[in-house]
Image (cartoon, rainbow over all chains, first blue to last red; front, side):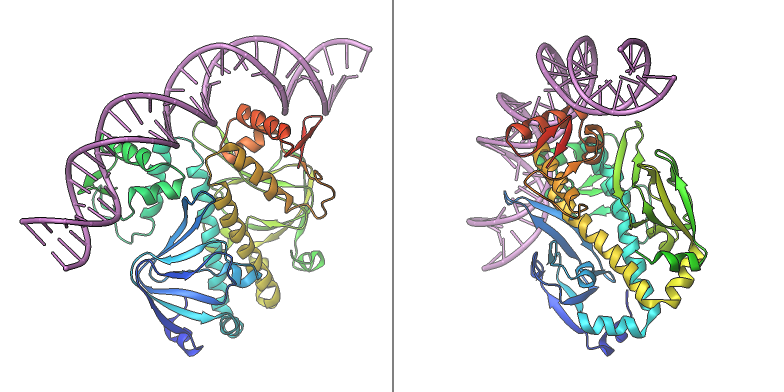
Length: 198
Length: 198
DNA sequence: ATAGTTTTATGACCTGAATCATAATGATAG
DNA sequence: CTATCATTATGATTCAGGTCATAAAACTAT
């Protein structure tokens, strides 16, 4: 996360996207560094049969879409506003100027990429299991890492729909619904008004 | 990839690992930057029931195990010599000295991380499909990227055993064997002396 | 409140990949 | 050349999760 004022000093602009609005799309050329001021962003793909695959969710303070900026390739996925959000956009050239002038910020970017790679490895290993129950539980626990403070036994509210969970894990909605219900029976999660707590 | 002489100037040492030898293991503290001089390295996890999950293969010229160096976490996986190999090891502190003195090399590291993140996204999306056949084919094509020159229609030799393919994709050996045989019938791959060509 | 839409729920059925068992083939070492 | 071991092969069986259909519950807007 780069200081907001510094970004503005390098001519970043603040953009507002309403829920569902496309921020960038697959196979487009990467032009900007994006940093979320408020709201959440979803990165996804649609495969041949139109089924959605969710790559990632990004939250307040996080940046996204950098990798292609560094290696001159097209975006591997789409970015869509998951809720209404405000996002800082900085042109690629200005980002590089900024990094050149501020090595410590360059190091932060490197750390952020390292962090994402690290979590990808963790989640890949935890989700490699075939059993949907195991994968769904691990996915919930993975989500917990984005929650600053966790109180009580079932403090984390899963904000995703069953469909989105299914799309992230490559399962069917019905399977997710059944497994989640089962997890409730086993007291592993709580369901209140259909929302899952873990 | 960092210039070999430069690494040596910063007190890197060359180590030899014979096939199967552990280079580092899961949950250990990251101490070194590793760069492969010759041979190949496999990164994997073993989950609760002892089943192997292969994270990645790394080849000559590539570095591995950096992410934990940057963010002070333990290794998320094990690194094992996939063949006999020579590897340059540079202590973390010396790596940071080197990066500090050579910003252009720091940028290269950033690019390398960005590149890996990019490919993780690509492969995650391509492999998200449920159908083993699709996943195996995409996996083969993904492997092709490591082959410099490809001649003819079936020029790439898959060096992994069916078991290793299965472990990477979260499938069973028998399934991989059957699917690969089927792919041969469909002329999508060739099998010579049990080795797969694509 | 009402209508319309989205999300969750649930049952019946079916298929494809896991599982289990056993054998054949190819590689490796002595 | 032979014995041993690792890998691939293949058939039989099972069952988890996908598919299909239909309904109920929650949210949304007017």
